[in-house]
Image (cartoon, rainbow, N blue to C red; front, side, top):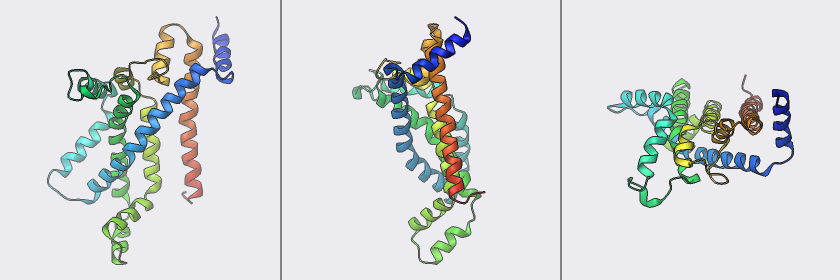
Length: 231
């Protein structure tokens, strides 16, 4: 079978509404979006706190946070596997090889990305924004929300980066999810499995979906910037 035939089969799978293929896409989106929804508020709060607070060890925390940006996802998966395994610290929860375990892993992967980008955004912002808000009678919490609103495009960019990081990772998802059909099989783990079996059509189809998701998120962000009056 030629590459052209394989590609034709891939698009046939996409547009025929293949239940297995779109079920895999649905699992990936559910896991990644759930992880982002949980991680974003915590990460933004942590990034803002590191940007404005002054305390002993702050610099060391920032260095650790920035180092975690390149932390291998397979190592995150390994640590989580040990914690969630039957004899692990959280083994009684019986989360291993479930979508919930994958969500937990992707939360750990997304947190440093979102927190580091928020930290950089707040540090790069005008410090007079918070001072002006407080001088006008805003509470510290309201002042923080004002600063975050003014840096919202950078934070939205962080969310886009976080989504790209979690939707495309394979190591952690494979280790704690187990690549179980209909339950924990994601786009990336399915691509790895199907191509190893020689089924390149489904691998190409899922790879195309992954590219569309990546481009779609970035195009949406660009449109959002345009509507917000960003240059």
